[in-house]
Image (tube, rainbow, N blue to C red; front, side):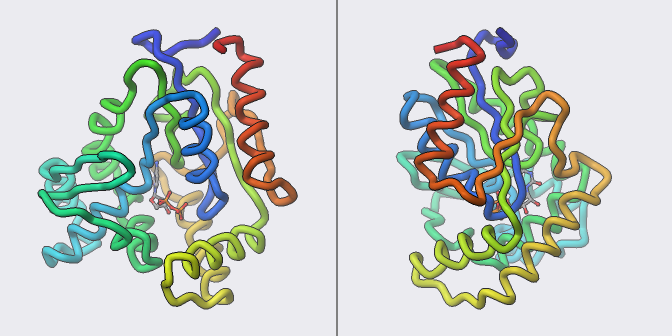
Length: 225
Ligand code: CDP
């Protein structure tokens, strides 16, 4: 059994854009009564803060300083930044694309590392992102690489945006997803990749409930619950 330093079980769920890992991770956390870290939300929050304050997405230094000073709070499924409820403002495609751009900077990633690790609390954590298993929680109890084909992911993202009442164009989404996959995989720091000790979960043909059950089954297999 491979536990984290503090003896707290961690399930790391990494994977590409719109793979459904956020939904799956949240449900797994609920079922186990564990905490949940949406690490992508932190990059999205930073992109939102930067655009509101006029900080260029090309200014790594200023972005890193902004990341260090952000007052972020997650509370009952709500996110607060600098005393203001953020709501769906970070869920737009513009914010997602901005997040992907600024996430390529090593100093930005370093500035957000400590904050992410504070989420590791008893009785356990489910963390979702790109580098949960490789960088943030390398000693995670279970590492899952959750993916689906680009077409299935575009369809999932389209439905998600429609449900939120946001405007969406499926062809544009597919184009953005491919572009984001490329940027996330090609960056020099913490690139999107399946680590050797992660187990692959291909969800193109799975429902959310099936994917959740599969993660829980693999977690039971590693012998914690
Ligand atoms: O919803 P989607 O999967 O598209 O993205 P997200 O998880 O909300 O993350 C937004 C962007 O932040 C991603 O495209 C990544 O570039 C970046 N990210 C990252 O670099 N590392 C993480 N641990 C999480 C997100």
